[in-house]
Image (cartoon, rainbow, N blue to C red):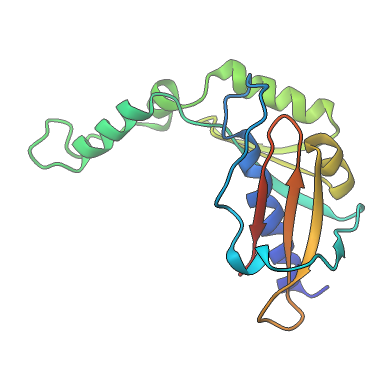
Length: 176
């Protein structure tokens, strides 16, 4: 595969798997995320699966807390009439007020490691955890199938689609 195709596959996998954790880490019910499959991808037939030995870099996202308070703060930060105008939070302050709880982030980190994924970076705001792993491990851990499709307009370009039915059911397609 050429470099651009590899980048597209990695980007697709990253976006697909980052959507796994849009619910709190403790949630166990299945969720269906709709509207994430571009129309062009929805009409395509897979040309195969991603090779199980391919390695992917992923960013797993956890949701922020206190969404309404965050929206209010953002409005105030950019309102010249507000006493909070341009009084930005430090990364530590943001994590404390709006980041996922430390316990959830630690549980996600432990889960990833226990499943054989390599944690490549952590972030102070606890909203992202960077990991890497083989497609085979990612499919096993997240109960997904990584499929490959021919790009509808770009010859030689491939896009990915992850379909799953694990604790977080989703269907995501990505392409450029």
